[in-house]
Image (cartoon, rainbow over all chains, first blue to last red):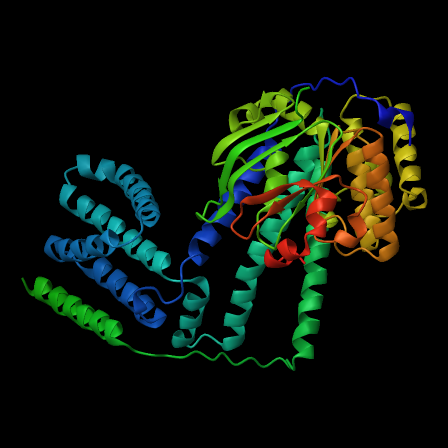
Length: 264
Length: 245
């Protein structure tokens, strides 16, 4: 055992202005929490089929973007508020925060137009933005990633593409956690002044590349061992229940009210 | 005597709301060797991260050498660096700790920042590489080493900074029997040299004689027993009932 290891070091740390590592850790944590946010809910929430949810969302987005009627937008917004009221408080926070930020940004962009006397149209655009963002966020709150990707099949997206998309999402999380741990390790050993931060970060990136190559090879090997020959068939069970039927009836109601307000 | 670590009623929940630590209270004296055991997902690794200041408690208090460890304190650059100098963490997956182009630079990374001359750095790096019997690897790329070699380099890279507390997260995972025996001997020697050793583990066969105290976690993320290592490890019924053996 070396002698210096048997006694305490007399070391006083010096301050460093650069907060690069902490900022990187925070941004990866934010990204990971977004994915965790989307995956923590139980599957098939509200007992509505993923396809029904996605189709409803797309339909509402199309109707909202086509409509020029405040009345129609009001109906949609009331409906969305009803859905939001039965979500969890953290989901409500997330939805309101996202919708609020985007709407305020849109409002700022449209301020010149409002001052030039085009208030009605500008407010209509802001309401449409608010409604569209809320629809998308509600859909993402009540759907899981794997459910959402499966619905792509409905739009004639090849199964192999959906598989690649699923694997990509999975690896974003795996590599996000891996890089987070590497940054933690870098932070724990950054006990003084480091003039070569870029070298450490390029080391982390290099390790990530090697790791991703190895994991890709391992996964392909595992797939081959399970009989994968390049063909992939996605199997999904489509079960329409009462809640799906209710949802479809509401959708039909929206389509009817859209045309009603167009006529008015 | 000032306690090295004092955790009082620590609760920790992940951002998604899942509870990982429930009312955890532990006191660690300088020079102690403590094993943290429990079933998978009981919160051992989270506690190791919390002790190292990588995650912050949702409630409760954490004192290190009599100083409060809070998110605000850890934002203080000088405090944070002094704290990380005193406590070394060996991750469960050693790969994440290796990011330099060769083993020598990897081991030298921490101490080069401490303002040591290159001569002092060389002495320390070679001392540690010899201690861990990996001197022959000094020019190799860390990423292409075997699992056991990676673990030894990760330990060397932490030990070279001469921390007062060493925290191991499942150190025996993925090691062959010879590497496990080596690591066990090293932990005993480091503890005899005055280092405080904390370790989360499942591998009881290879950690016998290393620890004098054991803290047992239940699947509910709470501490259910804290006491003499031998006494608890001999209570087979308790260990079986709590999914530890």
